[in-house]
Image 1: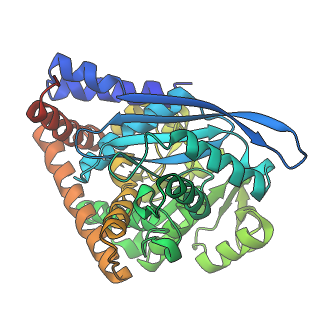
Image 2 (image 1 turned 180 degrees about the horizontal axis):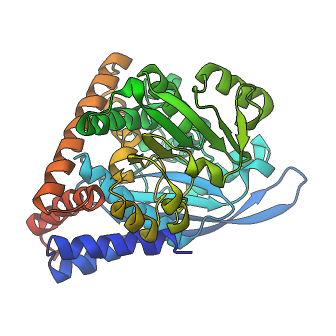
Length: 413
């Protein structure tokens, strides 16, 4: 199977040809500015000491401080983090935020670790990165298996080294220590705003729209919630144990209660249990991959029956899957646009932390929708300009913006 890194690199090279990017810019963007690998000890609850490996990759700081999440997962490796850091550069550029792109992670299994072990791991990892992160340099955020508490520990560790509180070093913090209203659900909510724009473009009435969501975690849950509030009929949802299907629609509150109490959506009482692969075969107006990368393979793409794919996950479609879906005339809203709600509200949080002036949730939501709708229209215009699909349109918009920054800044010395 093609790795996420190979996918991201192939997409970049394709768009570089499309926009006729200069050779030196191609070389610059194919490599990150900085890669940090740290190997550090953590004392476990039983008194033993384990050595963990962590990463932080800063792909670009041309348009501002690097921005990107931190994930804790057994599969984390340098290549994956490099790919996701590059995607973050394009994501922040496509919604025109004054940021570059970064990503980080620690290879571990947080599900097998106690709260105390996670805190010690997080603090030591944050300490190892303390020279390369900061509100003017690189601002981490939550990602896979990390959350508000992890961000609070990183902020505290960094602040102890500075001797004063630095809330702007991370985003996705708890509200009580400088987080932003609307941040927790921003990625899912933003994806729904993008979905509504796609429906409007295709003449689909949201109240007649069937939606399928692969993944019911930090992104999938609010996505199901807000899609339902817009009147969409969410007919299938899956998680790591399988999926649940009901052509009459799934009730969000009941679905969430089932997930919390029983650990999986497959125990939802009013639906048919389906296998992981079957969720890709459900007929719908919009399919939303909201789990890990490379979910939509060539085989799965051939079986899919949808008009729109809204990529809530990072890198969920393989190049082969992409080709099949484009041949089927499926409108693919790429990840760097579809899931940019999270980084957009992270930007709002960073601004609020620096100014120490906080906004209402209504202000946050209004500004979020405005930025995403503008980005959707700019991506559509760019795709028309280059006579290409939306993925290449979004990448062309982002790469051109980042390239212009390097042309104007020049090369030092």
